[in-house]
Image 1 (cartoon, rainbow, N blue to C red):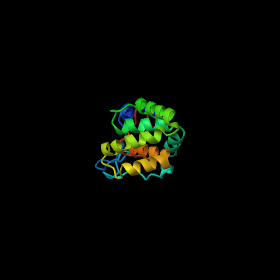
Image 2: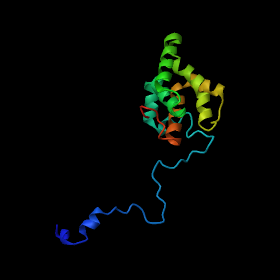
Image 3: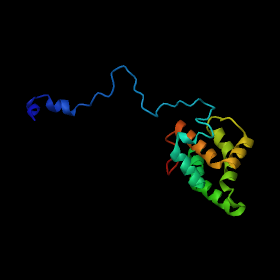
Image 4: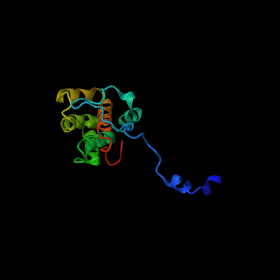
Length: 155
């Protein structure tokens, strides 16, 4: 390098690069919580906002519900416990495991995450009509409001 002979070359190379203009705040994508307290980050049928979570909730609702509940409880409830409970209820009731778990766990999820609107009746109606949409909404809310609390396996 012809510049290598310059005495300040290595000082220049080793210096930290300028990441922002001084005095100008830096906003990193996804770092700003834009969700109003007491409101869902997205609607029940806004599955296209995050198609990966939607497909996950559709193909494996037991695990997806476990991850959403674990993230929503800030680790107080285990993903595996909720998933196994849903599978056990599935075995007994026949295919209604995630819906029953949503009816049981979603009111607590709403309370733990800023007293989100709706009530137990709408939780159960959503679970019975479209359990995948209900689970995906919970996962999207956790991802939007607290991206670090995504459960042990992530979301």
